[in-house]
Image (cartoon, rainbow, N blue to C red):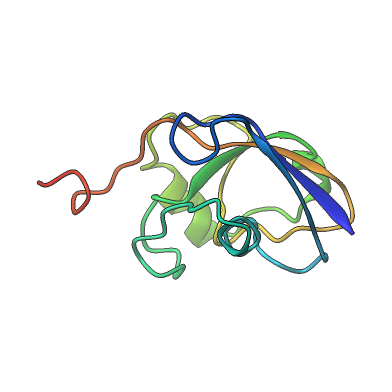
Length: 112
């Protein structure tokens, strides 16, 4: 089992969280299955950036993002070199430390 360590997020997991998952699941699915409700406005089809996360530790152990994900990430709020779309980032055998950004770009939830 691989550990996903979520850093504290004011709304989604105020105290942070540690969950164990089988390799092969996406970060988004793993989090949502454990009650950490990462937004995914495009239903995990890599068509938005609402599930953007930053992998603070373990980033290099993951498979690289494909071109479609990279293009979408360019639109994410708070983009960093270790940013991934959690709906596309598949967990491997290495533990990950994950930060969920404070903000997301979601016109529906922001009432625009």
